[in-house]
Length: 166
Length: 166
DNA sequence: AGTGAAAGTACAGCTGA
DNA sequence: TCAGCTGTACTTTCACT
Image (tube, chains in turn green, cyan, red, yellow):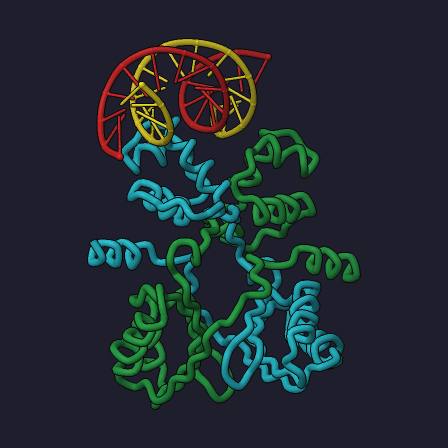
């Protein structure tokens, strides 16, 4: 489904919509240098082929009362596929866990969590994460401050790469 | 600027727009149970007050040729504020670094990076990150597979919390 | 290009301090 | 009474064929 090669206009569309996902189609068309109708067709195609997986408002977590952000490194006792999948399923159920990635190296998973305050994170940690079967070790690191948080991918890197390849 | 308390309708708006940032205003108004004009006014206010920081299309990094995702734990030689800020500034310049968070504990920063392939990440690692002054240690972990990647915050947790407080 | 729908504006009515 | 929010009516702009 998602194997069609993208032309420079498609990539520009993706870059613009990543930067401003609520841009109108006419504005988008103007920026990428084509007229509105074909621009809309391209967007629809990109959505259908899975290049665009969704659109999201970026909300201010702190203003909404999520004061705490924590990274948790999790090691499992068993790394059998069944057990890995079971842990991933647990993570999908926990709302405070926003991201879960399986890693190589010493730790098995890294979790990015948010919480209203430290005590509610602690109760998640001791009540949920640490009591989950097969969880052998958890090392948590509190985020002191955020320095950069960009969504998606760097399109300028992609363009440079395609230039040098051609 | 951003201290106004939110009512249940505002929170519903934020939750809906976080889930689908390109929803039309009339659809949004229908879902939150008010008519379109006041709904649009609320959205504008939420944007101005900073509760909504932007809208972004979620693009498929892998399909676009960013096959590799890496977490890097960085330790600095000096943790003086000037040196911390200098490193953060560097991170903002590097396009492959998508996120940079200052942590407590043994490591100073965690970086979330993307790259087209392993070799281009290696050249960033050895050519940029490791040659940066004051960088004392870097431990990288490759993401084997992603298990969860939700944007923003869990609004259901927020609602539960507000109920019990009241 | 043209139609139908949505965004955005102006104004008037309602509600609660 | 007055501030603030809501809904109706209308114009402009956009989405879509």
